Length: 340
Image 1 (tube, rainbow, N blue to C red):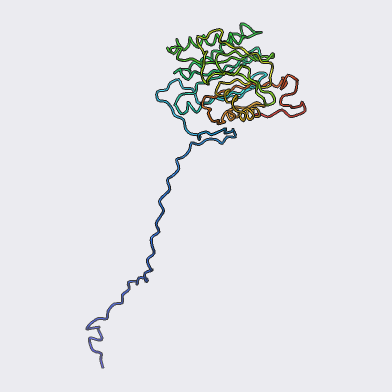
Image 2: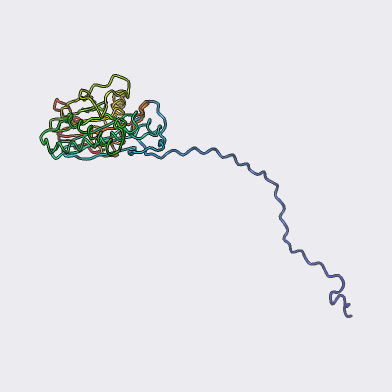
């Protein structure tokens, strides 16, 4: 029997199409959203610096950036370093701005320089600008420069002798002239104290105005060439230019293995800290390269805020003490000490 037309051709209601939409998986139970803790406040980044082995003495503030006073002109670099052979001598110098000047925005007011003469003599100049004078950094710089110019003249005029006092007076006069004529500044606003040292085979002669000082170092012990100031710190009674002749002090030093010339920022620390004397007395037994001597002045001491300047002169042809012992107790068979 033939099939009904509707059944043959799918007449009537068509069968429902299958649902091809993928079924959703059964939902997982809701989990609580984790709450992130509030971020901790970030520490303020500290200035980067090199580690130091120099001692920390007493309670001191942390290392920080200094300030720069607006409108400041005639500003020298905050640090100056030297380490060099000069004829029969090895010389190292370091001058570093003090914490007080970093905080106030003032410049480094210390200065130093040195020169080897054709005669073989070594000339060293150190100066400390007066903190109360607005252009004292200029006066200090011009003074040490003028010492070397005067020394060059003395080499030509007095090849067998050089007078440290005369060099100091000539340098003070030239400093006064340059401040007045080249810079148009009242020389009294550029006042400084300073010292001139002349080294020869007979030892060292130091002439000074003010409180720049000199020390010999033997077997780790410092001996000061001038009497220490007994009055208030940083109270200067004599300065340049316009110094009085009677204000010039002179000290004659016998040949020594190590001689140190320094401004009062260093000298006062040496006088008042046995820890520092012991540490520097050990460090300075041997010659230093520039960064080595700079490292030795990176000590931090409670109450030490002034600029620090040191010029060290080593010579290996003299005994460490007048008794004739070899420097630092070494014998001729031992290897020479290495540079630092």
